[in-house]
Length: 286
Ligand code: PAF
Image 1: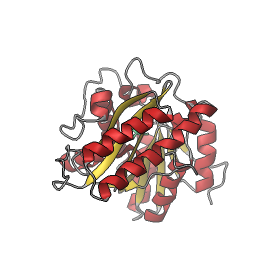
Image 2: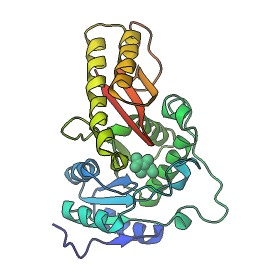
Image 3: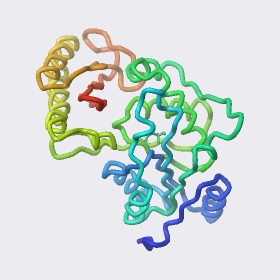
Image 4: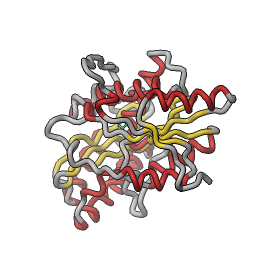
């Protein structure tokens, strides 16, 4: 295990590349786990998966301003570099890359990576700025680090599909790996934003996964997609969720809407719901 005192932290592309290129010259495979910090067990599961797949693991912590709209929680997003570094050290991570916003977006920065199609529905409608910000920063992180593979959680399933599309379209020489969603005991998907929930909201939040499971089961057993969606939405409001951005079955690969008998794709259920100021997202296959 890495000595807790010695997890190196680098803040510039120059220092990042010096370490990664040295490992790669020795024939070691490098995995990158991009994060925005406030690490929880879901993130640490990604590090564990990375350690099984690669010889060296780099985690990045960067709260990316360009994926937040002005009214969103960029300023208040939890930041905890010291405890993140300690947790990464415990997991045997080899390097933490934590650039400043000025280092990431230098003077005159003017480029955006825009992924058509898969970015458009769901969070693309609810948060129109979001996937441009994500695709741009992930493209930069992949080019800066040049890992053999990069690992992302399936909790942000649409984000994962956007990143896979981008990496394929831009011929980025990296394998994009999706990791299953880590969940609390009551099924709530782990997320840094769960920290915003009051105890009462946290109780209600546990119902999301159960309501999604019931809707997915209904469709898996041959029920109508639209009925499962309508009943699921009613159940969410009855459970105490205040607003629903979406609760929809879509194709697992290109996130297209499916026909009523869903024979034209592989259905997956996507949800985004609000409790007070907190927006929770989740997804599940049948
Ligand atoms: O999922 C996240 O934490 C972020 O969207 C990511 C992929 C690190 C890009 O900022």
